[in-house]
Amino acid sequence: MELMDTILKRRSIRKYTGEDISEETLRQILQAGLLAPTSRNLKPWEFYVVKDKDTLRKLSAAKSAGGGMLAQCSAAIAVFGDSEKADTWVEDCSIAMSFMMLMAEEKGVGNCWVQIHFRTDASGKAAEENVRDILAVPSGFRIVGILALGIPAEEPKAHALSDADWGKVHRV
Ligand SMILES: Cc1cc2nc3c(=O)[nH]c(=O)nc-3n(C[C@H](O)[C@H](O)[C@H](O)COP(=O)(O)O)c2cc1C
Image (tube, rainbow, N blue to C red):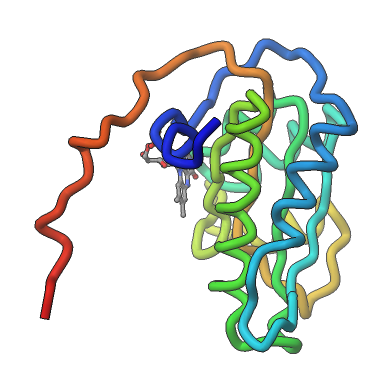
């Protein structure tokens, strides 16, 4: 697929067939993230791959709303940034997430970014703390988001080139 075709076709997918994603495809998705650019080439990311259903179900409840699809997906990649390694951990890890989203799309794997950073669960506890507890992640690693992955069971309409809002472009 041409890159623009992949960009247009990519939509957030929140319903999955339950089919497995092959290890090779998962590896290619992770590889895309590991090859993303980072400030000073520090690569401050840590990717936690989850396939265990019970753990996915726990992650789905880490925040009060908007993470329900994690209970249904086939795999998830929780992306953490080492905040002691690079002050650009949010930027670096967000780019890695984006690269993984595009590779997933390219490979026919539906995906959705689940926001965790700055979110809370129903009791007001930080969703980041919940995810850290569930995955036993050291405290220096800060969450950026979780990428839910699964074979799509829905096909939202692709974006169109005409959706691009050129009013946001300022030529100075
Ligand atoms: C930083 C970020 C956080 C997001 N968090 C969530 C989320 O927690 N739950 C969810 O269902 N979708 C989430 N999304 C998906 C957005 O809702 C979605 O990208 C947006 O509505 C545009 O739709 P599209 O991805 O189909 O083009 C997130 C997307 C981004 C980029």
